[in-house]
Image (cartoon, rainbow, N blue to C red; front, side, top):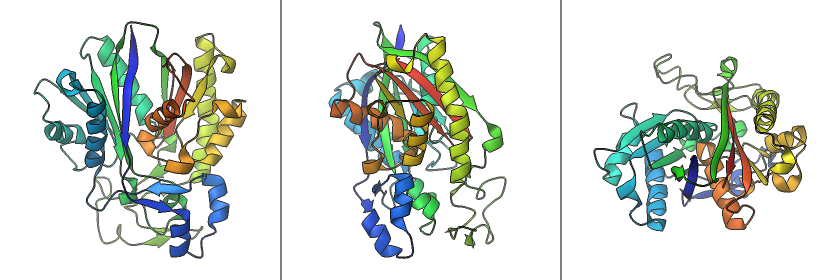
Length: 336
């Protein structure tokens, strides 16, 4: 018995923002140089009143439309996000009400960003195989645009808003999760973070004051701060090692894997992982050019796109790997 990805649906906001638009708004930005590193040409931006729960509900609605009767059989709802609607209660309970789910449904929130899908998959795997749950909808959704400064090139050109809904169940065949590994590097907790606005440093006039860094990026302490070079260094030192160890303990090599689906962090990150792991280009799936970095929804959206494009088919053996704020990182081997 294995934990299986039964189906995936996703939702991206209607509003898009192209590099042409950003260049028009910010003529001093050298977008050509930045895009060589990010690889992102289009971002999806939530409306001012849209939240992660709104996007997540749209994704679940699409999943339920594809699978009539699904919501009648769900006994678990996991919501992974770092952009909660409220400080509390958490998003899973708000979505539980929106979907009018039974009182018997187990709800859980996981506060992770780009590694969230893999971590949540590990949690769901434990719940399914302990017999606590039988069918889980995992919602990964964020609206990073609400905590990104319009004057911050380091983040503005990279991130998209979006949501994915993944139906997880137990397989009686060889399909499903083969192995999974999750790790942490707490010394890198401030590589990507929002320094203020919560209990450690409550919101104040000072935290809402804009500041300019050495690279000319302008943001407040209540907006996303990301040290791209530091994050790249942590990815390079930790993720390839984890992937290699995961393959080795299962008696597998790169040649045995049909497709690698990494968190779509940036072109620079994907290029680096491809080089460090010595992957053939056609085994490293990419969709960030069209959708940007969708944080926790990045991997399931990429998986769905790969299935739609014919790059991935049922029965293929794949490796997925997510990494980001924390610093957290997780990788898994699955048979689709």
